[in-house]
Image (tube, rainbow, N blue to C red; front, side, top):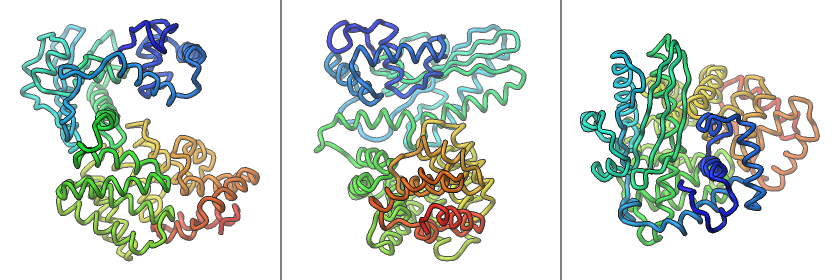
Length: 481
C-alpha cells in the first residue's frame, strides 16, 4: 500500500508510521513488521500507539478502512494499475526466479529447487492460476520491474524471493507484489541454519504456500477485495463463491445464512464449480452442529448431497472427502470414515486446511484425539493466520485435557460461534473457574437455546469414546447437560 501522500487523513504521520500502519492493516503481526523493518516488536507497538492517537482510531479494522478509503481517493483505478473489473476466476500468480545474493553454484541449485517447489505446490490449489516454471525461468537475471512483468504475463500477483547466505546461516525473504501497481502486499523473512538445506526448503515452501493459498489465505483475501469493488450486477459464480467462503468462516447465525445465499447463487450460475459445492456442504454441516437450523434432518441431507456433488465433479477434493466421511459416520459406517481420513491425509499431508479439518475428525469421530491435537498444531504452524484453525486446536486441547491451552486457542477463534462458547464454558468449568463458566453458559441459554452438549455430540457426530466422555463431563460441571 503506497502511503506517501501528505494530504487527507494521513497528514501528520511520519514515513515510518505510514509503512507500519499499512503493514499492520494488511494483517502482519508486531514480530513480522519488526523483522521486515529491522526494528524490535516493542518499537512497532510504540509506533502503532502513536498512529492510533494521531488518527483518532482504536482498532485494526478502523485503520484498514481508513487506509483503504484514502488509497481509493488518491489512486483511482485505471486499466494499467488495477485488474479488469470484468475479470473473474482465480488470480494469476507468477513465481519469479529467486534472486541470489551469495556466490556459489550450490546456492543456484537450492534457489532453483525452491522456486520449482513453490510453483508445483501452489499449482495444486484450484483457486490460483500459476504460470508455468518454464515460462518463469526465462526471467532469470532480467531484473525488470514488477509492473512490466505483470503486463507481459497478464499476471495479477508476483511472488519474489531473495536468498543470502553467511557462514552457516541462511536468510530468505519472500514478498507478494501487486503486479498492477508494484506495491508489496505481504512479506516474510526466514532466518535458519544452513546445515540441512532440504529441511529449510521444505519449511519455507510449506509456510509460504499455506499462508498464500489456504481458504483464508492472502490471495483469497486480496481477490475478495477486488470482488467487493464490483457492481453487484456484474458478480459471477466465482465472485459469489469467494464472498460465500468469507461469510462461512465467521461461524455466526447471520453469516451462515448469508454464506448459504451466496454459495447457492454460485452453484446456480455455475453448477460445475466443485469447490462452491464443497463449502455449501460445509455450511449445512455448520448449521447442524451449531443448531442454526430448525430442520436438522433436511440440513443433513443437503450436507450429504452437496458434498457428493462436489466429489462427482472433483474426486481429488480432500475437504469434501473429509466432510463426507463424517456423513458416513452419522450413518454408522466408521470404517469408511477411517479410510477416507487416511486417504485425505496421504493426498494432502502439507495442506493446512486439510490438516485442520482432520484434526476435528480425529478428535471427535475416529482415531486418537492426541493425533487430532497434533494435526491442529501443525495446521497453525503452516499458517497461523486462520481463526477457525484455532477452533479445532481449542476443541482437541479440551478433549486431551489441556484446558488452559484450549482457552488460549479459543481466544483466537471466531468469538461468536456457539460451539466455541460451549467449549469455553466447559473448559472454565473443568479448571474450577465457575464465574466464567456460568457467564458463558448464561449467554448460550439466551442467544442459542437450541444448542446443547448432547446435540453437539449427535450432530458432529462425536463417536470417539474419549471425546464423548470429555464433553459430557465438561457439560456436567458447567451445568450444560
